[in-house]
Image (cartoon, rainbow, N blue to C red; front, side):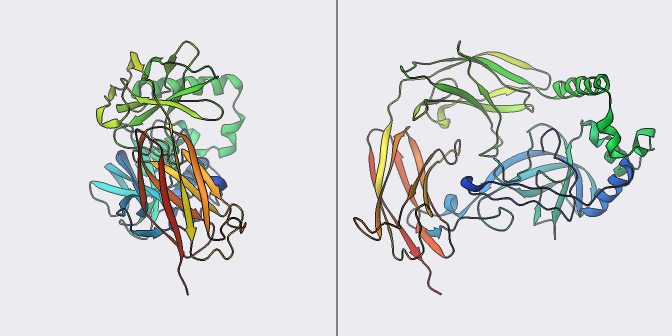
Length: 405
């Protein structure tokens, strides 16, 4: 739920969330248009079965690819919607106040992976007003189009007064459109007040990156990965400047791994965790408190080699498979870049072999990877394959099997 989860949506929301990165889309619509802010808040409250205040305490990905054992058959069908099938995030909240629904002290909510699939955004250490959809407390979901957000937002003041049965103020009787007709000075004042409120409950992390740059022009960035977890396609990042310095935007209070990556226009060059290690097991987390600015953090990036991962993929039935219907990806075990290395396989060509095709990933940084096979179609299975890229290039074999009706 960023600075504003778009406009209100509620129970009859229209939020199309496509997980496959090559076709991301998200559209929101709402029929909650009260004559005033108070009436809109009432419609929102009536439209969702669960409403509460709480803080996110844990983020995890649910996906058969991660849970299966190597060699097990798993689905290779391209997931269309996170709320019906495919990989998705589950966020655990510690509840501080319930307005609607039968909830205990904690609740788990489903959402997308981020990056355009309608996923709701939450920062650790902050308290949110959450409107969740679902038939029961064990099957609840929330999206970027849902009402709610960080409780310090201006636009939530009326909603909170309504839910808390507090006295109405004159602003609550205004039509929503009146909020967009403020003068420039009024807008600037509201912005500054909001900025100060958010700065008081969040922090920043700043530092420098020391690396051995190649001759080619490189593009570097630092990701701030909460130790509670994060959306694999949507987490805080900061660009590294020419002098090696970086500084995050405002972060929710908590602990973060700092993960630097550098690449040219054609290949990855290096990656390292603070203080300068290649894997998270040896990384040090940085703690940032509300209202605190951490500085002087130095990430020293060691020299790294890259390798290739190549192989063959075989389909037992290539009927209907087109030029780019089969996609391959290497997925980091630590999920820092979920689809970092990608390739497509053309099964439409009969040469040299009709059902066996060659693929390759070049310039792969060291690490442990899952191989993800995705097919535009239904009924496809593949075996889970893992690969360690450390001191040499790798050659692997993949297979696709189509379930017969």
